Image (cartoon, rainbow, N blue to C red; front, side, top):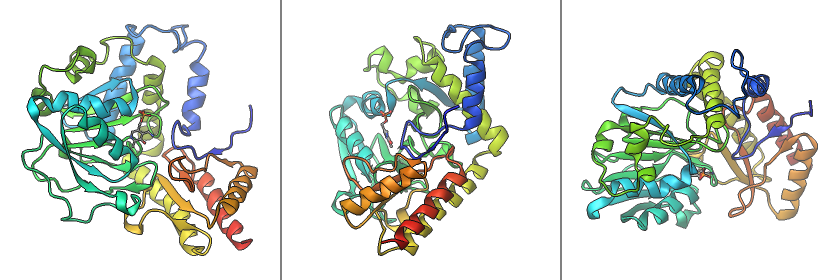
Length: 362
Ligand code: PMP
C-alpha cells in the first residue's frame, strides 16, 4: 500500500482507516451477495438494510426523538441553502440568519432569493473571528426559523452551545461538526450536514427534522426539492448515492463500536484541538490564531504566520513530514488544520510538534 500521510483537508477529509479497510474488503463482492457496493441496486434488500442501520445508528448516537425524520439527500449542503427557504418561507414569511462566517453568509444570500431574510448578527466587521455575545442577537418571534452555522469551516469559529432564539424554530447547518459531539436534537427543528467532513465521503447530505416542521411546509417546492418527498419515500424517491450512504453506515458503526459514542468523540476532539491551540498560544510571536479564544473551533484550527514567505516555508516543512492540506481557504489565506473525528491524535501531535519546532527556528 502507498504510505498514508496525515491529511488535514477541510473536506472531503480523512476517514477512519478501519472504515476504508472494510470498504476495500467488500469492494469487489459483498459477502454472501457477490456484488460490489458500487454495483448493487438501491432497491436491494442489502441497501434497505444499510439505510435502516444508518438511520438507527444516527438515532442512537444523537438521541434523535421519535417525532423526527432522517433523510439522505444529494446536492451537498449548498443545496440546503436554497431548499430550506423554498420549503419554509412560502407566503411571505421571513427568517432570521446569524452570520458568523463565509458559509452562513452564503446561506443568507441564497435564502434571500427565496424569501424574506433578516441578518440578525453579522461578524464580517471582525473578519468573522467571533460568535455573537449572549444577548447580542434579537430574534423576531414571528420568524419562520432562526438559522445558524454551528461550525464555520473557513474561519474556524464554532458554537459549542445553541444560540438563544426563544421559541422560534432553530435550524442549523452542522456540516463541519456533525457527529463530533453530542447534540440536544430536540432543541432543533431541522439540522443538516453534508457527509464529507465527519460522516462519510462527498455525495450525501443528512437532514434531520421534526414532524412539526414538516407539517408547516407549503405546497410550493417541486417534488425533488420538497422535504416531504424524501420522508414519504424513505430516501428512495430516486437513486440515492448508494456507496456514500454505505460509508456513512460504516462510520456510524465505528463511532458506536470503536469510539464508544459522541461524548467520547468530543473528549478526543477536545484533546486534539488543545494540542494545536496550546502550540499557537505558546509561540505567539510566530502564530496568530484567527478565532478569538472563546469562539475557537474544535474542528478547524486557523492561524497565520507573519508573512507569505514564512507561511510557504511552514507549509513545505509540514509536507516534508507528511502533514498535508494545511493551506487556508483561498478566500482568507493563512493556515487551516482540519482535525475532524477521523484525524488520529498522533497526526495532531505530529503537527503540534512541528509547529513548536518551526517556531524555534524563526
Ligand atoms: N456549510 C459548511 C459549514 C461547509 O463547511 C460547507 C462545505 N465546506 C458547505 C456548507 C457546502 O457544502 P457542499 O460543498 O456539500 O455544498
